[in-house]
Image (cartoon, rainbow, N blue to C red):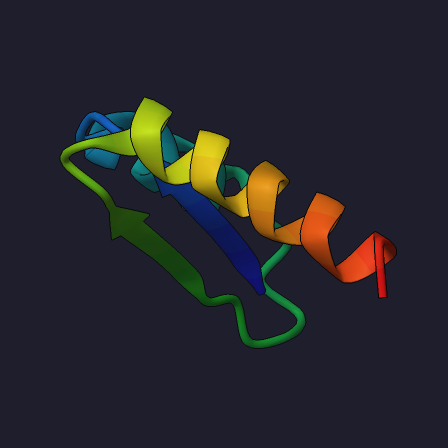
Length: 54
């Protein structure tokens, strides 16, 4: 499984990757599109820092 998180729509890149994958097993691709991606990443780092403070 290929799981990505991005601020843009990388559908053509993900399709190319999936099409190039071996066919001897199931392949899955998931993209989570987050419009405010940079803000999301910053908040995740803040939360991780907070967890480290406990």
